[in-house]
Image (cartoon, rainbow, N blue to C red):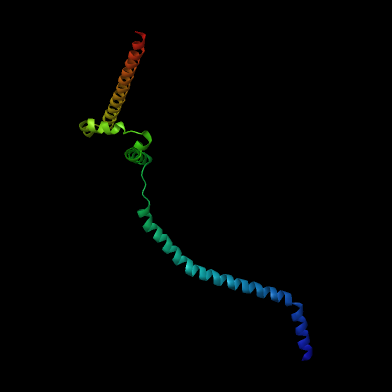
Length: 151
């Protein structure tokens, strides 16, 4: 019987590397399958919940406007709030809205812009007239001063 034990031990020692390698592969496969099962048990319900949450809240968060609508809104907002800071004076659009209030309410977009342009040109013309009057009065005063010492 002891000879049988010695033979078994020799055979076991001879195949020990293969046995250890098979044990490591079996252990790895068991750990992989258990991790896969745990991941599926947690991941599938969590993934479904996230997907459903995104689908229900996506409609509330995504509101799109066209670039033209945004540009119109921004231009109006800028003119109403900040344009006077950069131009140093009131804009002619305010004069146009006062002068042509009936026209802008009844007219289409083109007529409204024409009324604004007309009011702006009136304002520029008035400013130019004031400057010309001021120059002519300064010029006549200068001529009077230069003529007086000559006499």
